[in-house]
Length: 482
Image 1 (spheres, rainbow, N blue to C red):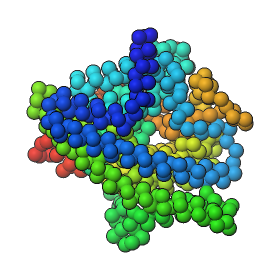
Image 2 (image 1 turned 120 degrees about the vertical axis):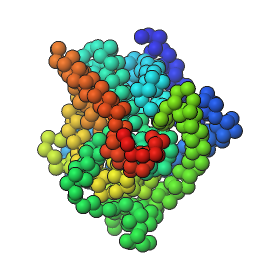
Image 3 (image 1 turned 90 degrees about the vertical axis):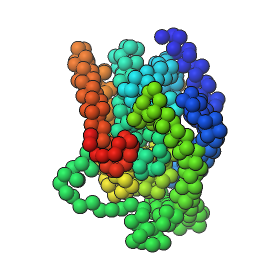
Image 4 (image 1 turned 45 degrees about the horizontal axis):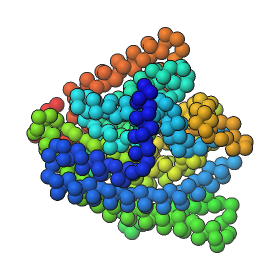
C-alpha cells in the first residue's frame, strides 16, 4: 500500500495546484475527446464550464464571508455552554490528507470509481468530484482508529463509496429536472444523503393523500408579487437573520450597516446565480447531449451517464438558499433544547444551503417541505456529532490540530451530518465477530437495493422526486413500462 500512499500524496499536490475550476473542465474535455465528441464543441464546453465554476466560487466566497460572521453571532446568542466545539469541515479535510489511508484512497478510490463505472455498477462518473472524497473517507479513518486495522478502514471507504454512488444514481433525474443541469449529478454525499428521508416523507405524504402546501419561489412571487421576487426574499431573509445575530446592538448605526450589507449580499446572490448558472449550462448542455448520445449508441450502449459535480453549482438557486437560511435558526434552536446534545453548529453553519440540495430536488423546490425534512434530519445529526466527538478530537489532534483554550472536544458538524455513514462506521467498527455480521448485513442491503434499482429504475427515480415524464425521457423510452 506504500505505493498507493505516495501516489496519493503526489496526486493531492496536483489537485491542490490546479484546483476544481481548472481540473473539472480538463477532465470533461479529455472525456469528451475520448468518446469522440467534436473538438470545437468539447473545447467550448470546457471553457464555459471553467467560467461558470469560477463565477460560482467568486460569489460563494463573498457570501460565505458574510454568512460566517452572522451565523457565529446567532449561535453565540443561544446562551448555553456546549462541551463540543464545531471547528468546521476543513478539520475533517486535514484529517484525511494527513492520514496514510486518506492519501491511499485518492488512488484506490479513483481506480474503484473507474471500475464501478465501466462495469456499469453505477451510472455516475465520480472522478470529476474527487475533492469531496473526504466527506466519507473521514468515516473510514474512524473505523481504522477504532479497530486499528488499515484494511478494515479501506474496506469501509470502498463500501461507503458504493453508497455514495448509489444515492447519486437515485437522485440524478430529480436533480437534473429541477436544477436544469442535464447529465450532472451530485456525489458530495454530505449534501445528498438527506434525500433519503425526503423521499420517504414525500412517499408517506402521497400515500396518505396529505394536502401539500406549495411554497416554491414561483408560487411566492405569484401570491406576493414584488415581495416574492428572489431579490426581496434575499433582503427579507438577510434582515431577519441580521436582527437575530445583532439583537444586543440594534441601536448602533454601524450594526444596521452590517445587517443591510448582509441582506443585499443575499439578494445579489439570488439575482446573480441564474446568470452564472446560464454560463455553466451554455458549456454543459451541448457536450452532455453529445456524450450521452455516444454512450447510448456506441459500444457501451448505456442508458444513462452522469458526471459527478461539486455542489457549488446548485447552491445559489432561490429555494435552496432560502431553505438553508431557514434551517439555520431552526437547528440552532433544536441544538439548544434537545436533551443530551453537546454541540451547536457554528463553523459549519454557513454550509446549510448546501445541506438543503438533496431535499429541494426531491420536493421540486418546495421550501416548506424541505425545511421540515432538514429540521428532522439534521437535528438527529446533533446527536451523531456528540457521539463521535471524542473520536474526531483524537483524530484531529493526531493530524496536528491544536485545541484552543477551553476546548475539550471538537468535531465538524457538517461532516457529521451523514446518518447513513454513521451506521456503516458503527457496523465496520463493532466489537469482535459482531462486526462481520453487521458488515454482511450492510452488504446484503446494498446488493438488494442495487438489484432492485437496476430492475425498477423508473420507480426509484420517481421515488426520489423525478416526474414520470422526466424519468421516461431520462431512460429514453416512450412509455412508462418499467
